[in-house]
Amino acid sequence: MAEPSGQTDHDALALPATTSITNRLLRIIFGSYFALAILLTVVQLVAEYRHTEGRVNAEIQAMGATFGPGIANAMWRFEDDVLLGILVGMKALPTVVGVKVLDQSDIMVRAVGTILDQEGHPTLANPDGTLLALQPEQGLLTRTFGHQFPVIYQDERGQPRAIGKWVVYSNQHVVVEQVQYGFFLIFISAAIKASALWFIFLYVLRRWLRRPLMQLTDFVKHLDIANLGDQVFVLKDAGRHELHFLADTVNITAQKLHRSIGQNLELYQALKDEQLALKGLNESLERRVAQRTEQLQELNQKLAELSITDGLTEIGNRRRFDEVLASEWNRAERLGQPLSMALLDVDWFKKYNDHYGHVAGDECLRRVARVLADHARRAGDLAARYGGEEFAIIMPAADSSTALTLAQAICDAIHQQEMPHALSEFGCVTVSIGVATMQPDKNLIPTALTNLADQALYRAKSEGRNCVVAAL
Image (cartoon, rainbow, N blue to C red):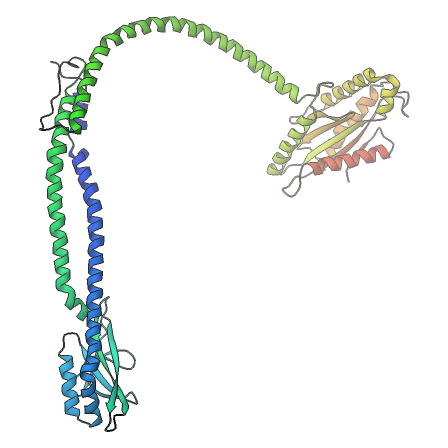
């Protein structure tokens, strides 16, 4: 049998140990187990430490009743040797690191072992009465702590007399020494249980999971179209479990695929014939779609032009005016250039409409618009119908002088057309024009320029019409 073309790929996918599900399961299971074991061990250690610390404290508290009367008698009778003997005996106890006795004025009478002076510094007190300052130890378990007891003497009449106090010192090293054997047993127990559980799980997973999966992998690796359905996978494992169901599913799937191959070949040929037919239909459809797309693009372009063009005068409408004003305002602000605008109003247009009719009024507006369009020929200039008989011209990068010159030329050109206007003082159609020029900046808005031009237009009308006035 010929080696399948994908043999190398199958080997690369099946063999690397890093993809072993056994190892992954072991990592997951024992990662969780170790985390839980560490937590429980820490809890055990803390509990053991707290228990031992409480026991040490209880032993020290018991010393108050045991040694207190002897210390009181020795101090009352000034028996220094007896007092020293009691302190040395207490120092020999495993839970005690030092003892000191103070009188009522907090003056130290006698001390033995490691004690704390009045400033809290560790000091070594020798039986001969000498004191030696010690270097404070660093670490978590080096703190020295003391338990203080009053020195109470019962006189001959049974009356208690407070004649001083005595302090028993211990430290956390003592507690650790008391529990270190218990700590050792806890650690050893946790390590033995973890190791035993690790090897048990390792054996079980490799025996009951890894080996059957490797058998199944080896079987699937050698399958190809030529032998699909001819071989049956038999899991070499006693008893039936979930992997046997997986093996049965693989065998059934292989047989179904084998039966489907012949059907697929027939379907493939039929689809190939249909593909040729569809190719011709697609080419025809693509041509039709291309034609319709081109038509739609033309219509969209016309609609776009109509949306920004005044239907009567065929120049820009108010929407186009607002868009261009905002755009040119931003560009002039960015480049630091001036921006000019001229607002035009046909003089006494309402009287013209009433006298000559609306048809003549519409023709008058169209002729005015043509004059504006003929003069607004610089790159970026826009002539637009502002509303009713009002028109506007936007002149980017034009200073006041340039804008006034253009506006005056438009005013003269409309007057020279001599369109009859019987109700006008001039006998023909004229216009009044207001011109404004600004340097846009971020503190202003485009309507500021429109307002200036409108104020200039109002002044032009007030000054007799048929004239050009610049904004103040």
